Length: 245
Ligand code: 16G
Image 1 (cartoon, rainbow, N blue to C red):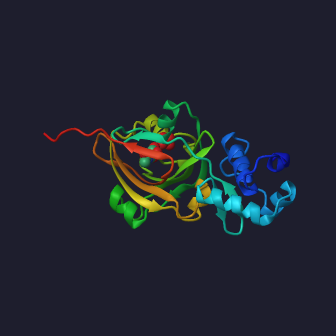
Image 2: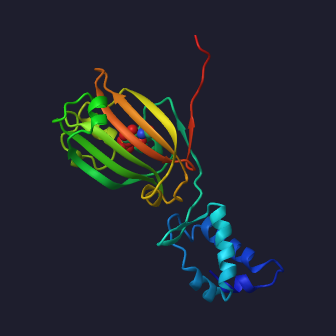
Image 3: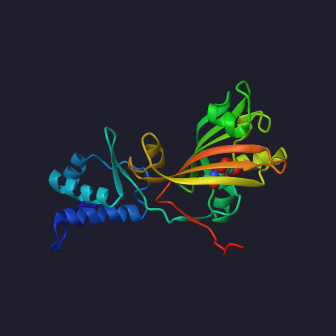
């Protein structure tokens, strides 16, 4: 932050100037999503303005959703995303959806291994308690933006070794001849809680979409049960509607 910019000319209040400087730094990409803001006391000292002024500017940006205060760990940048327009009628994978937009994807693994199914998973996948399921929990990142947390559950019949999924789950299933051909998806409103909020880089309580997808093979067998949490500020889900027959 160039302090001279804050002090230079103009008649506006100092907190507005600091606010503008921070906003510019975020918009120009000098500050990125998830970056920590220097402590308010350092900002005040550096720009030679009072802490009250710094606090006012930061409060403003928190209200606007460009910064988020996280208790005990500081203040972080929330970069506005241009919303992903996601079709609700096509059975595609995250990797494919992002590739079509020219974005590369990566994952931060939260959990990956073979487990016995939970009661929910037993019912949905139609498995006995002693069966094994592959669980794949990932923070899904496109470009530099964390967009969703996905927790997929696949019967070990279709995915005996979850470690083999390093990139796209659907590509891995496809390779084994188990690409889903049909899915049922449920979307509901959800307020993102910690620790998910920190992973997604949004404020605790921010709007999210909880999405469950159950997908089927051509044989009619359930192949996937995935529970996801999508950032509400990052997605528009779009469906084409036609007149009923
Ligand atoms: C999508 C699906 C998810 C599926 C994943 C596979 C939703 C809400 N979820 O994100 O169910 O497991 O794609 O993606 O659309 P991948 O092949 O890139 O791993």
